[in-house]
Length: 291
Image 1 (cartoon, rainbow, N blue to C red):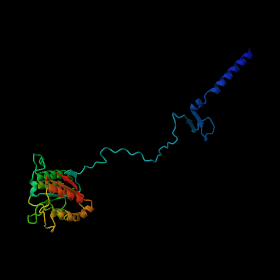
Image 2 (cartoon, helix red, strand yellow):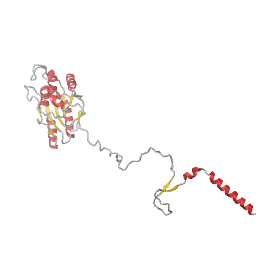
Image 3 (cartoon, rainbow, N blue to C red):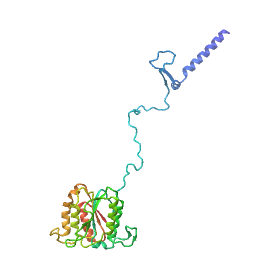
Image 4 (tube, one colour):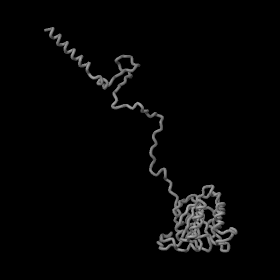
């Protein structure tokens, strides 16, 4: 009886050992391991030097470099509109203008012609067949209404001749800041402006270049006709047009060197004026607009 019990117990012991040896080794690796660090004293009392190692939930990327404490945090996105908060410059015949500007505005008798179509005038009245002058006045007044203080300007009125005074005229004779008071004055001046005989383009361009400092930002030249008189004059024995093409680049050189922008505007349907303005713009690097 004792012998049977001995063999039975031995059989159970062998079976248990066999099962233990056949358990997959990976199971052991998935169990948390409690490891004592090298600075422990081997006692059972907690020493604060224990490490609990837990298997990773997924593949580990060994190339990942954690962010250091001293690294700059990622830049936060800027709020909409912060970077481009500045308002665009107001336009004059679709050309944005800012800084310091001289307007050369043709007020010769031909500006009374009506061939620019209909539209609203500066008072908001609908005009079926607007004159060239009314069209230009409306555009200039609408521009002046929009500019902010810090914008400086003056107006050279293009009309007259050596025997028809004034042979061109100016509003202020100097660049003037557009304060609220000046704005109101300029608008009333433009509204009241009348026409007179002659188109002394050479003289007007000369005044715009030589009577103002070279730190000008923009020079606007607006006309509806060819320079008149056509032949010799105060410019010498050459034709009016040829003298302009020869002399203007010399007058404008200082302003051009400082980055002054040139804008040419042709108003009306005079084909000769269109040809002259296109040539002038082409020769001097100006933008060209036809209204």
